[in-house]
Length: 300
Image 1 (cartoon, rainbow, N blue to C red):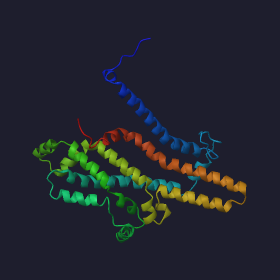
Image 2: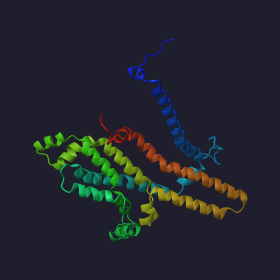
Image 3: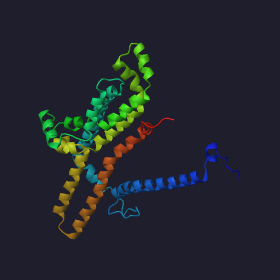
Image 4: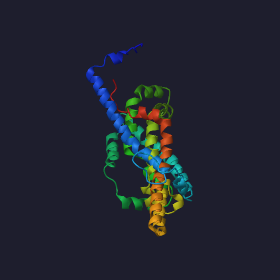
């Protein structure tokens, strides 16, 4: 039997390196199982008629939970609202973040340290719920989609990540060359900086999109009409409605048990419906995400 030739990197491994590699692989495998098991459990439970056992074997295959969810009249409007809020909110958030991060990344900008301090101050202290509510109402944003989108249009953490990328990953010589060609700051930002910032823009867009997709608090506080509610709030109302209906319809023990099983199945169906869009989106920007998480790393 022909033996596989070891690469130069494999030959350089010592015994301790090999042991550490095996231990690291085992730990990562355990973490993977710990993360995947609840996801697999939720998906399989959504297709099971009864409560799923720990061995992940469904009691009886059924689509009743999904039928009940999809027959809910406000589900599709909630889905459309979430797509609108997520898409439009992500675009606005990226524009605001770039407009804030790029000036702070310029070396020698007057009062840059003061502005950066003021931005970071808001990460630890805010105005509170009641002043924010009054502010939203006085601006005329109450019960409109802008009450969900605009308060989330800037994350200081995301801005600092983008600022670090602009300052450390974009060569300063490019700005000098663009200045010699007559490009001002706006032209340099649009034609040079942004095309070279694809990885960080993709990562920040994913952060904003996932946050907006899963957001429910702003909609719960600032929206009155159910037709304007995003998917997360609609699914919450669906579960509450199902529980109330089950409580009023349960006239005997058999009916109560059946309604309880249906409620459990619908909980898992709601989890799957709310999670699938982000899981479908993630693989398309995974390569950018891998590059983006290395922002600020020490270069060798």
